[in-house]
Length: 118
Length: 118
Image (cartoon, rainbow over all chains, first blue to last red; front, side, top):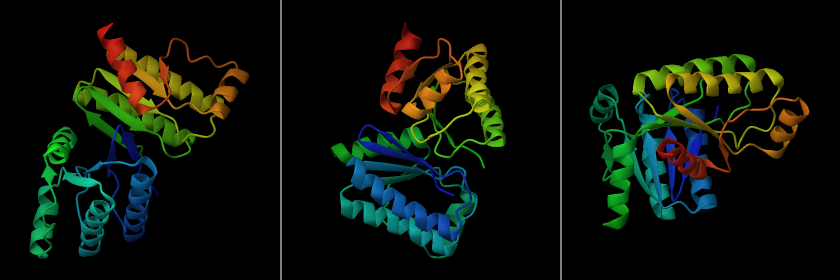
């Protein structure tokens, strides 16, 4: 099961619309990094609106995707984090440190443009 | 298996990155129409770059999605039709009549903007 990655100009748009199991999350991580390399993307928006639950492993993988993408030169914005996901993250003591977030895909794209110009 | 539908402003962006079986295609049809209704979308870009093969049933479902979306007031642009898919469509005598097409997602969005303003 692969999560589709859309390329739009300099950006990648990703809407996670399945529950992430460990394998899907790892494959997702790999796919995002490969796609950044392939397309020379400057930014990535990962929309989590449809993700209802998250565990510590998935949270770590997501955090890693952000750090790895940054290393490769692409800025990542996470959008649509649901209340339950936010609660779980904080309860678990997982802080997605300095990861820009936004309410939805549109605002994520705007945020990304600000980040890249700022 | 559901195909993710991304909402971006007035548009829906859909990148089909799985081979479409009959059930997935029908569910996709339903999901697109529901999402158009829900979001009040004016246009839809369906990107088929990753679809390598298509049969007459899937072709009909896709054609129906276009017609049904038009009825609901949303314009559809198909993008990224692969050579093999194009060959199959024409060989089968299936003409996606008056369906605007474009090379990729970016050009599809531009095309959609032109269609909606024109």
